[in-house]
Length: 93
Image (cartoon, rainbow, N blue to C red):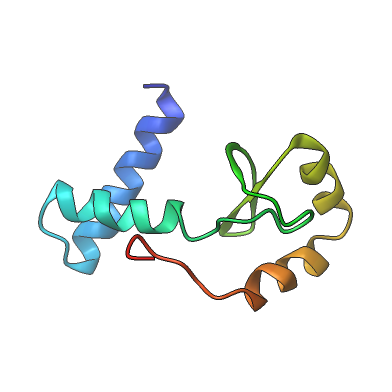
């Protein structure tokens, strides 16, 4: 795992410990829910590619392609509003 991946895993683990999660399984469940909460590209409305994303503030935004990532960067507020208007999805959906 790359160094940044280890740091992210450590950060998630620390947040989980502070929030009361007692096991790695609970941490993995929490991160899995976050990872699948967005299913559509905010620009084109297509299914996301989990490898194409940007960090915007405290949020990770996924896209269907690199072209949509570029479009998002030109007007992030517009596309974040579209994301926020969609119902949230969880692992149960």
